Length: 248
Image (cartoon, rainbow, N blue to C red):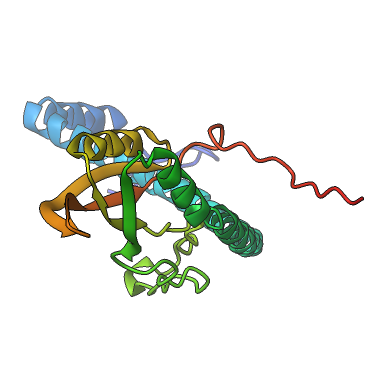
């Protein structure tokens, strides 16, 4: 049978329907899948991993930029202060050299009075009936050490970039020792002579090397030999007076 629709705008009951999507059924299916605890843990782990990776990357980038800025500033400061340190080391070297020269002059000035002090103290302590036959220097001659030349310094390659070694400004002083030979007619005078030498501020370490009996012009005397060390006293002990010459 043939049916004819005589009503305008009317739709046929058998017209084709458009396909529709049911979001409710999709959400219910998804919620069903997410209800599994292992799936939830996996999703949360992935989200946290991505977030942590992004955070670490950004923080590392910031740290790298900060370190790069600090390195550039350190290089600039190092270049600027290198000249200052170089000038400082040069000034210290000049100062130490001048100080060493001053100390050399002081040591020479102090050692000018070594022998006058020794002779004066020996003559002061020499008792009666005792005489000396020899006064000689014992040991290394005075002035054998070259104090004018600067001490040699060897640069260690391991210390490259470190401050240079300072110049030694101290001056080694010579050890002065004197040997005395003499004779006495009284053994107690020899003992008193040694005590008086030991009491002097300029002499110390009085040692009796040997003593023996001898004949001098038919008389029995004691022949002795002493070793005396010269000691440099404190400057407060030494009293210097100007020499005056009266002219008539």
